[in-house]
Image 1: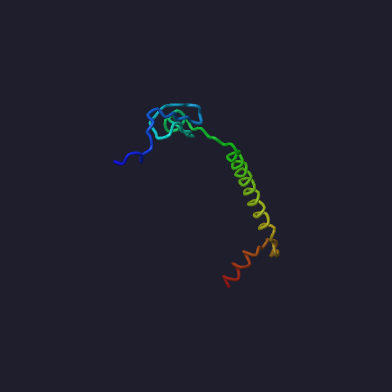
Image 2 (image 1 turned 120 degrees about the vertical axis):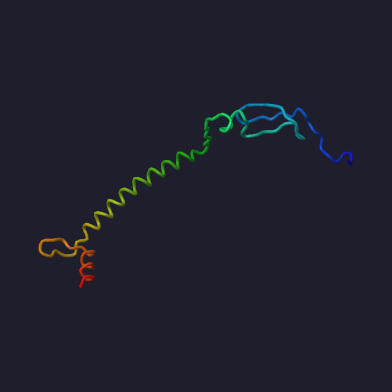
Length: 107
């Protein structure tokens, strides 16, 4: 092997997690910063931890709730509009455009 080509291997590198946990491992660096470790990862802890710094989840849930409420209102409005589309009255019975088209097809 060539001498001086490979970086120095540090057997006591300190790894620091965002949760505050620290442990030692081997690395070519002296210190390493990580976001997740075995102390805070959901796979190891069994608990799901949601980090939402910009409130994206809250905003999504609000949009979803608003969309569901307007969907129901829109369906009701459309249904009422269809019922209100009475074009004529034959023999005391309301006749819609749909009924007229059926009559034309049957003739």
